[in-house]
Length: 566
Ligand code: ATP
Image (cartoon, rainbow, N blue to C red; front, side, top):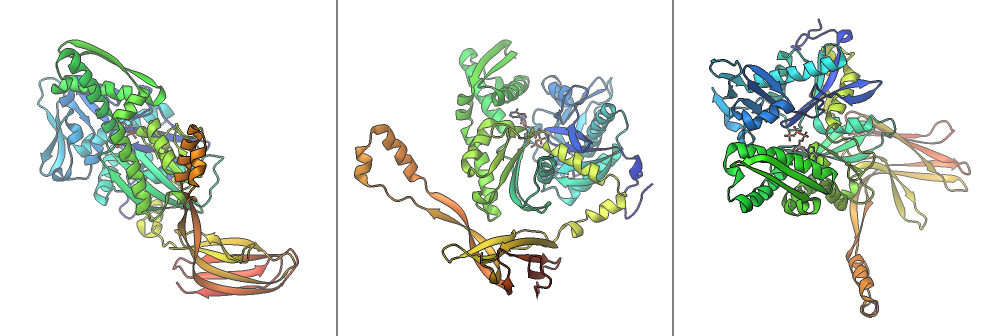
């Protein structure tokens, strides 16, 4: 048994069977890797997105989609939307989403649910959030073990970036109690980035990524700097006002109003009709992600009346506009919070179930420049299923670290090891441009984690000779070019249609990212460079942020070297 530094005894590395887990408020997923490729596992109901719910009927425990279905007939014995309560005190939770399920209760300050889980005439038992999580995770592990044909022992679990230490500890304990060793908790956005970067065609390059994780009860957005395969989270935002359930609500209200018109009764006024309305609204919402029309149909919705209707996507996008705009603001806000402009962002990774919604991806397409890839099913043919990203990322990480002793993993993933210093500004060289102006070429991007080393080759003037290398810090700013106002009579003389078009085009200003040359760091003269020769510049940033710069002619010995203190 591997045991050290308070790490719970777990299996020997060689005996481990590992999976990746996402444990959401709405859904959970389990994934494994085969030949370095991650795959999400379907449970015995055939679901890859497994509703995070448990339901008790006559002493039997149901989980996943079966439990979620019981929210209509057996809400008081169905525990749902509880992940968010793990590691929290009763007084700090928001029980809104449990309205139509077992209600969270205050048990000596902590959260529990009262459910009849034994069947028969037994009294209801009090099930703590920790116990509910353990029971649910146990079901996930059992499903994964059955699928893989061997007992799963260990997992990497992805968690939101704002999960605090108490929540982490509570999650690890709940998993351990379910017989699952937690190798590591990784953050949701990094898991999503890992899933994309693990694709064989992926080029690991320095880039700025926005991860928009739009779930059922919350939306989390993060800006991640990817530098030489290392990820740094620069800014995050967490929102509970704009998420999947709010889109469900838009459709529920829409169909409730139609129903009232027909039958003069509000299906939202009794819990059972409300639960039916909610389940069908969610199904209709999902259908609208795929097609331009969707059915809404519920038997005996209220007062014994069946109800059936249709809605098209345009109508849905109109009635849901406020929520859709909320997602835009959330994403724009976090880019700003990171001190960046949309032009700085190379990729927007959309994950979470709500990211299937075409309107949201199309809106982001409109916000970001064309150079930014919006990785969602509606905007990219190569996008990975947004609902699977985090479980896949977690599984890939699990397969990477499974061979290490638990204590070594704990040590190498400890915050004092993983929280390293970053350079604040880019470092680059100045060369002389075609019209004699100074041109900045970045060597190392801002937010690169130290220690780091980058090398560039700079062409010497064609005729060769002495080359002066200036190494400087660089920042970026956004250059806005307003279009020239068009001569008035030119507009008046054109035909009507083209007037309109050119008017619109006229209003568009051009925005581009340009480098601003900052503090000089070093200068070096390389004498007598050969005709057509190149100068190699190496920038080395040590862990304490001190910089060493070396410049030499490619192919020659010697060179110039200088050190700068941090
Ligand atoms: P949270 O923790 O925020 O509650 P989660 O991470 O547990 O969410 P996800 O599976 O990421 O859950 O998101 C669930 C949400 O995604 C639900 O509101 C669901 O209706 C929605 N959803 C799933 N598939 C689609 C789809 N195809 N189109 C639109 N919405 C979808």
